[in-house]
Length: 381
Image 1 (cartoon, rainbow, N blue to C red):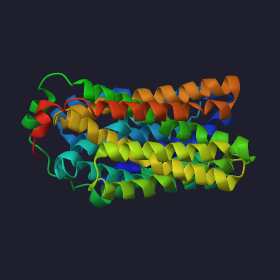
Image 2 (tube, rainbow, N blue to C red):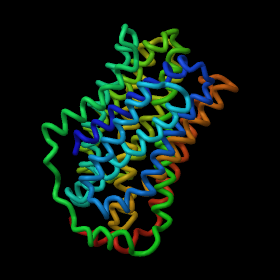
Image 3 (cartoon, rainbow, N blue to C red):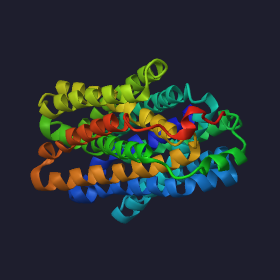
């Protein structure tokens, strides 16, 4: 399952690294190019609307493999026909199918490892995924500067999927009975704590994809590097993600998700400041790596806190998490792109510390709210 999520990472980071080159090839503005981020977001939201029903009807295993198949079909479509309407549709379809892999996988890992170790498992899975994703951004950057072009880099997800299916396609974790999943989907409405943490996830998803989709653009403008060379900056960012998530998996066994999340928001803010002020490539790489370390902890801890706030309704919590994350993925990069058209990418990146501050305040506020009644006795895997 870690490797399946890793294949998803090769898609999401590969498409993110390809965006500046795709924009240059299509000759569109930054705000129009930002619609690709919106397309990714719409795909995530679509996943959230169908994930619960699909997993109850077909089981998580079939949903995950079907998601990988749909994701790869979309990636091949983008590589074959990079026209604006086609790429917008492709980005949406790729992330709709890929998000099935991510969120069904997170739900299965949470149940498999239990409430005490679920946050660590999610963080470790994302650490493995980002480690694999680093190769995707690095390979795409190298191919973009060669005779093969950036499209060749998009072949990584399909090739990785085929290899995974041939070697480990029959293996899967033991799942909860379907009846228990249906029971977990009920139990009354989700409370204020859940909604607040959903807002936090929205903010941190926006931050991550502001870096993913516009970090290379700002890096190029501030340092004088070409767009193709600046795409390696995402490799520094994803390297920080990998280091942070492996470390976060260990720390999650000792500290609460809320404590780790607030600390990570501070680290991200420090990394953003170094990156935002940098005019030398070395400091730009340093800022992106530090930002990646902070961002690495955001998603796993938010998902763990959403599951806690749902009273043990794992599939429902993950389905709603994809909706909150999707809104953040779409709104953040699009607003940043619109601001960049009006004021330039450097002032526009001030949106990042604003989102971090809002997220930190929300985490602190929800800490004082009462826990859900069923949280004291969570469902057993």
